[in-house]
Image 1 (cartoon, helix red, strand yellow):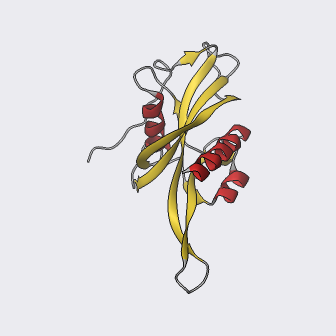
Image 2 (tube, helix red, strand yellow):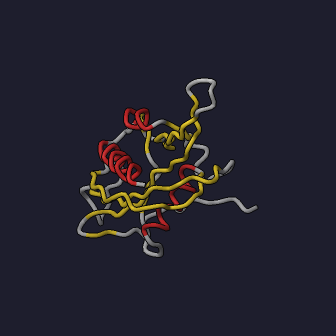
Image 3 (cartoon, helix red, strand yellow):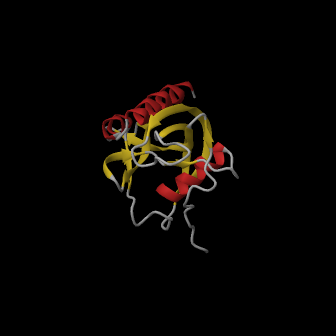
Length: 168
């Protein structure tokens, strides 16, 4: 098997209206939970979050949406590169605007970003992935994920995910 390599650089980066366009996902899975020994179990949703190499708190995988891919393809790629997971992209959750402190450039001097976020049903956790040396994965319950979100906009995406999840 050949090793996966993360994309780097900004030469293919998409911009729109002074914003850097990014795509990401909220990776999730179901776990059986049994409160007692009577074998009555329920399905609990667990969310995958990753650490940030630049500070405290946890994040959902996301990154630059490039010219040669759709937002959906970018979200799937970022899940593989940053979190080392593969799965099925289930649905669009929403667009979220935020200001990046670390990604200001000539095309976006204010650091404004617009993220397209999707729900990703995880089917596989990779042993080797491009950012494994700088990222750790954490599976969390919904309440743990809300408490752990590093950014307010990700908390908003998580709330929208919860609303979406209740509909299916």
